[in-house]
Image (cartoon, helix red, strand yellow):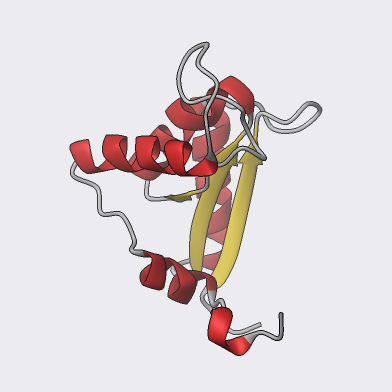
Length: 121
């Protein structure tokens, strides 16, 4: 594989890494030790941890992933209407913290996606 590698850390899944600060920072330290500067780090968390945990991850240099496949909520006790609502929420939080949010084209480049014009469906 050609660097930069894409490392996705998953937290808050039953039987997996707990969604807490110590585990997040440990995952970052290990990735730094293994890959140096040759990786891009992304974090996702399930359930009620999704928004607060991905916010903390972004503050520590991670890309973040949110969506209904990981959590049904868009705030405490409030069911999300769509993936777009969750994306809008995390975007609003990150921009309020002066963090840069990738455009759709930048995200496709980061993930090395082909784009709709290069697939056969």
